[in-house]
Image 1 (tube, rainbow, N blue to C red):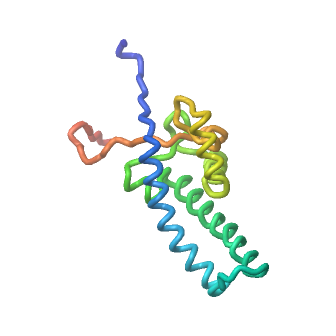
Image 2: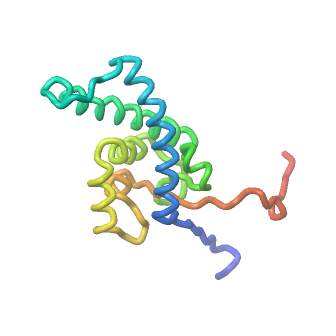
Image 3: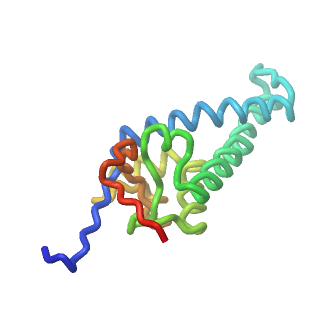
Length: 159
């Protein structure tokens, strides 16, 4: 490879790392959303009758909306949620660049409202980029980012 050629390497995140990042986010957001739902709807009685069965199922929608907002805002602003930051992961476009809003919205929608479908089909139809279905639709990736603790290869230039 000549000096004028540029080589770009993107390290795709492992499914297990992505799962643990999601789990961290899930615990954080579930705690927040549960508090919000109880504040808004009060303590819901879990006896099985028509009224409470409907109330239990409607909790899915506000919780999913909270997840959607969480993932959309954080991934659009920084490419990372709290879970991804802890595990050194980042959401990028397919070229390793910052995400556009459309890609973030599509990816976040799949994670928030259709995750089992999104993941299972992603595994079955997985491609070389380890994308969920909604990652593919939004042209997004989850990548492992280089640990920035080692600063020996950083060169500082003054303007």
